[in-house]
Length: 255
Image (cartoon, rainbow, N blue to C red; front, side, top):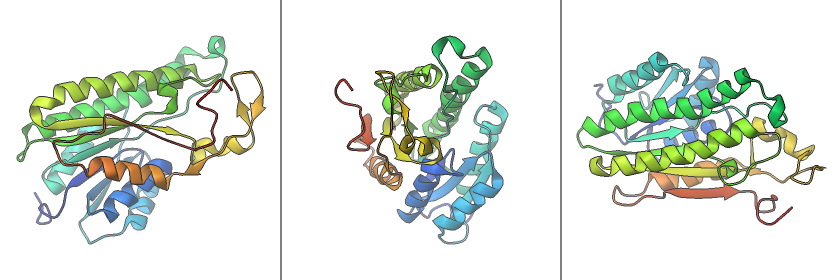
């Protein structure tokens, strides 16, 4: 354990090299967390931590493939080695998957989405859970990045929709089993945060009636602020599910 191990809670953020993960890493660092940025691209992780700033030793970049159990174990081993404990996991890594009709999705495309968005979240949550269960003081918090697709599908997105529905089941299961160990688990369902993944929204995306229409987005910084709130609750309180979305996006109703 390093000398800086006693200076604030420790957060691990996956998919931290861009988009929501980058915003969350920056916001958590500003809120006093020692932050571990995990993702596939070392250079992008370095850029995230440059933006996050903070005193020397308060951040760590760990290149990690969440679909690889060995890589995930290394992520959490390096976190423990540097900081001695884990207080928060933000399970953010994910891929959008193919924009394809249901009968045109290949098995390889399906498996890539499930492997990244669901199995990757499971592997990271399991490693965090193991550490939180045995560390002293015991406990911690896991926040899973869901989606409005966990509630209603978009056309031509069956793999992504199925994985995000399954994420809700994972969240509930971890929350249940974590009770005895002081481990809280919640999910944030995001709708149209402005990131590279939602760049097409302004040009037009398929709607339920078969048409194409542009959709509003909102600053991903607000997702990060919501996660900081969830993470900052005392151990006896939890937000099981929160939805943050663009106010005018076509989610409620029949359109």
